[in-house]
Image 1 (cartoon, rainbow, N blue to C red):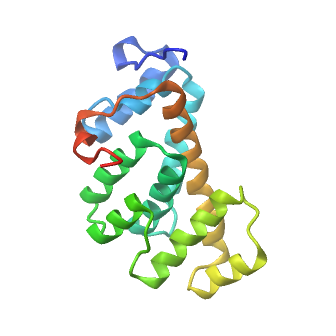
Image 2 (image 1 turned 180 degrees about the vertical axis):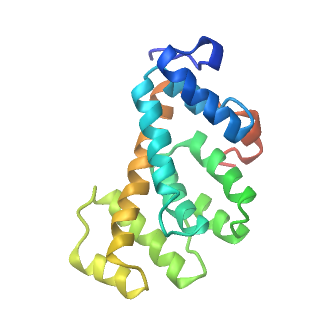
Image 3 (image 1 turned 30 degrees about the vertical axis):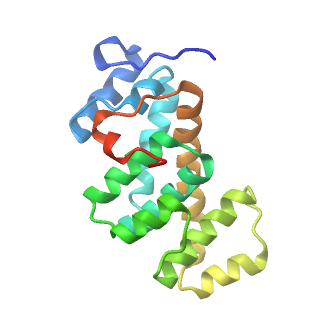
Length: 182
């Protein structure tokens, strides 16, 4: 496999340095995923921009984590599962929800479980859900807007999961306690 560099701010391509600098201010350390994305300033900017947009949705932190962690699990992304687990813990997502997402099991809350199931459907059908799937999701209390926001979160995870697969991103020390599978 082709080797990729995990850039640090001082060694990154010029176009990536401002994004890595901003991310370090946000996270408090240089994140390996972003260091690998720095190879292409365009994907790094795109990922950070899309992440910022996803965080502006009306979805709660728990709902956003359901979408991202479900995609991480389905895509088999060990890096993002460890990172998103840590972020979920910091953001006080219920431990039972985190465990269900890591294990691919049912979430006790019926509305949150409907979101998890619909995210699986969007992923597995590559965006071709049956009309009945959408109707069931809407009947669970979500909206047409949420349908599109599931696609947004899924798109975000395609960028990070696929980058991690190709670049073989090493897990940051900050996420190591949440290695997946455990």
